[in-house]
Image (cartoon, rainbow, N blue to C red; front, top):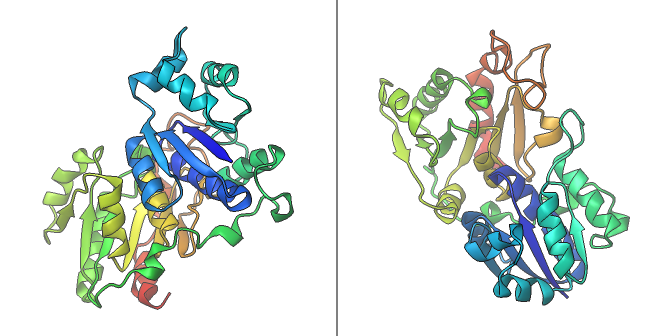
Length: 317
């Protein structure tokens, strides 16, 4: 069986789609090809999930939005037994459906305010399509170790803790000062900490340079480079972001810091994840309101000491 999956959206959406596709491969034994962001495709191939991956932004694949899809993309779609479209675009799904033997539309996430985990909803759609074991229910607990590279990789006793202070929205970011306190506390415990910045986190560099203790800043150029940093680390702490979803998926002990977004919907999936969330009567509000409340209680009230305790014990997990 040959399956093509088209994945649109942010990195977090893509990681959840990969978890769903892992369930498809587990159930059907299919050969999987991806149209997705290049980094996500490279990671999926490296993990052995996909046999091939092509950039979804390429002119050939983008031609699906026009009146005449390219011959190459027609051939790719028509050669597959099933095509899964992880997108909200009706135009994209209609184009694929007109070319495919069997196409399925998989909404990347539940509607805002619907308190259902993203992966649970994806799995329920895949079950209805007959591509995932119906006896497994929509839970994903049996899948948690599917990509557990952390358990297989060796690391030295002084392996660093990676701290990622960014995310896709400043609204979701734990204060940089709190990351600084956590970094200092790790150093005082003799645990090296390193900061990780992604391509969209350049605005945070100035704040990091102002710290009294100058941290080492890592800037991985690809998801595969980030994967290698993660599996060589002791643990990870970061906001609700795509990077945190990747860390959790790879089995790294991950402290996921949630403020206005909803962990019921977006809790990272993995075997060693702990969610930390402050107290505030207004949360969750990220997907249903334009702004956070002025007080910012949900993020400010997360204590660095809570995170430190988790990261200290990470070597025993």
